[in-house]
Image (cartoon, rainbow, N blue to C red; front, side):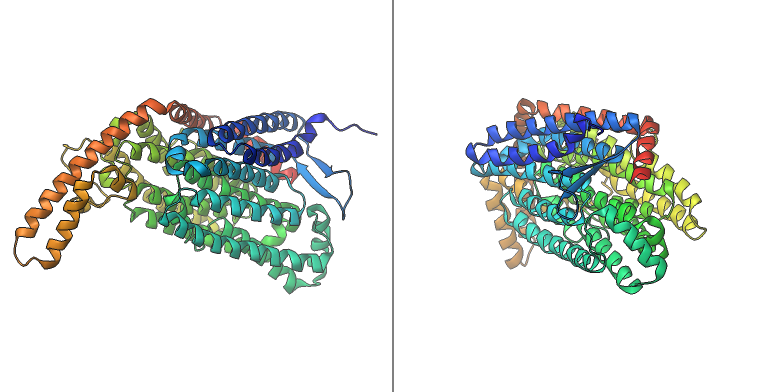
Length: 567
């Protein structure tokens, strides 16, 4: 009997370790201890998956791991190949540095008595994402979808403000809608086939498609499961929950939600496409056509929404809607290179968007904790690591050569050429429009954060609102009470005034508010400088990884190609 290599246990060990690590945290009830456990688990899990990646990329093989060695239908299975190991390694890497870069905001935003619960949820989040990557069982995928949803909602509302609670409720409603659709599709699929394991499902589904048996129910099942995962992934127009959730959460939560959580559902969808339904059948039943159309709409309309934003985190969140559209557009091209480009874009977005969210948090920390564009003017001079990282992340998202966002766009063009004549012009036009829109909302912000406050000129996103003095919730906390009294007095005067005296009061209030926010920004700068070595290290690592993916993308594409073939 052939003996299984020891490294083939690593996917199971990774999932188990993250669960055990989370279970250990309530025994300490201490945020600092929980954070150390969490980081230790992420490092150990990342090392195991990286070793597995080297093994599978070298041998070019995949394997199936039976949990407890019980065969189907009683047992459960894990299946791992180069693609799964690559995604798992990347998820551990990004989560670790996202937490490290946002620790200062975690300890400021999350109440002390709940901090250990925050890191517990991070462990469960990593556990569920690894399970979605490695599972070979559709119902196990559903179970970990629900765990992922609850953990993701928890890290949004951990900030414990009215805004995050409302955002969490919207997130939960939309997520449960997606989960319910996916479960409904699985129930119908099991009723038709009698199987839940992915590799057992595929031959039965192909046979039914060839014979025409259950043709309409089969089409409905594929549409419902794909729709459910699309809702979970925030594909346009199912994105309404995303801007508030990502925009109001603490920086590390926003980074992980955008960079990783959305991608876990997409990876499960890719596995369903290749391992259960087959791309040919999805194209025949026009499922990929719908994915393509919605992806194109997301690419353009997500960017249009971002262009109208005045809040840097909400703008970055709407940018994620556009980037998710890129991925679905690639999957809908019905070409091998299109699918490879979509998977590579998962990686490029996963290392770029967390850097943007963390950089935005770093800029806000030295700007009175305000995320409004008008308050971030010149912030990059007060936190140069954040400023440089945001500019590099913005250039990557635009698709400038040498950055991680460029190779997938290049391969989307190539994949469109492989596709049909209808998709080719649509992709070319959509990529051009989306790239231009990306530049229109990212570049003005990059200029604004590097421009000193005494420089002339107007910010492209609307400096006309500067005199209103409306910061966000954190800016209000950062300013002194005198500004609040004066601002309240301004509003009272505006309601009752019939002459120009109110304007003078408003000018006085605006000046006082600006002065107080400047003091808060100076205080934030000092505090940030003393305690953010982890932030600086994270920015350097994310920047280096971005350049690495943008320049040496060839080996990654080879691993992705082999991984998709083994699916």
